[in-house]
Image (tube, rainbow, N blue to C red; front, side):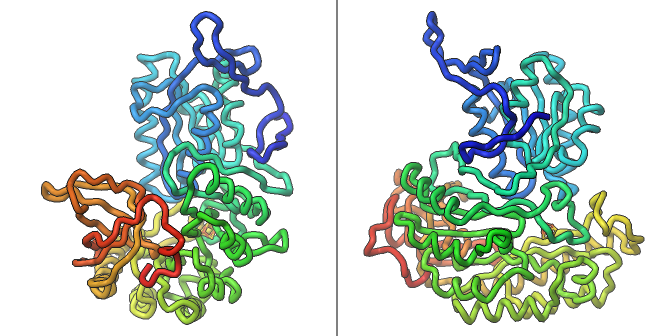
Length: 497
Ligand code: SF4
């Protein structure tokens, strides 16, 4: 493969032909020339599986493809190019991907010009085999090559078929510019890629490589421009382990968060995903100081058993984890914490399982994402003899979920009567009534009725009083419609964000 270059901070791509826009002299149609090929307007359909990082990558892919005259379609039957962005972390996502890919065979039989590509974590480890196995698959590409998507699509249209690209970006700096295609005020911003942790159940370090951070000043400039030119008001800083941000450059997530405080017009900063081992005292202190930082922290614990955590290679104990929550809540008493739990890890005993229930009691999580352990090939845990049956795993998962729901119900009940500010992001009809919904600063979703049925509240900031809750939902009534921007006098600190 030729050398990868990134002169503009737009990510790494092959040296070679670049896209050039021109108008057809006869029809006036906007066309793109790349090398000796002309690209007329075409449509791309993309299916994304897995985590927020994958959704962010898909948006980036679509944004690059715009430069090659592709527009996004929601209808797979209308597409000239079909892409899958895959996830290797969960079985369910994996199975769904294979079934979708299989079904496409018929579409390609009807439309020979259809181009099909597979990206993401499955493509990183199995791309070559996938291309061999599925006749109708044209190319596969790993997550570190997404900025070269136009080069790969070009190669396919130039007649090259059946190739797989899973090279790593080995440059010492990780430099990109966030690309967004939507018109809403929220943006994902990737600040670090890869992971150095090697949890024994996880495939990510093998599919996304070693940790590499962007420089803090680059992230700051990137977000400042998003706020200034694209109307962004809320950002989610993304990475497999954002708490490691900047280590190799002598920088830190805590410093970056304080830097982002200076951006006028930026209202809310969230970050995910965190590893408890890398939460520093400095970062905890920032949660008490920073005005734009969300009061919600997602901090995956995975298990409440010290011995299971050891087998998972998580590098902390339940006591250390609970100590972090205590410090976090001391720094900011309004902190809301959520977590991930894996039920039935390899050879988990009944006692180890009960330790997880005890931890749920002690931690008082606002919500949890819980999964039954499923083996991922190429991980260390997949090589171990495992005595646990799927039935036991399922039982334990259900017990964890039921236990957590009781805790959650009590926590949510305390919200009744309080007012929260939400950014409205959609609506749904409940029993014939249209209700709008928004997410609080602390990441709870509230559904509420508008003042009038005609009111369009999409992307408005709204203060909502919570009137009713269950373990899984919050209902409220609108108190104030602030509008699409928060005036300075109504800005932070707001009493009940
Ligand atoms: S911290 Fe562990 S679970 Fe998270 S991505 Fe890294 S290896 Fe996977």
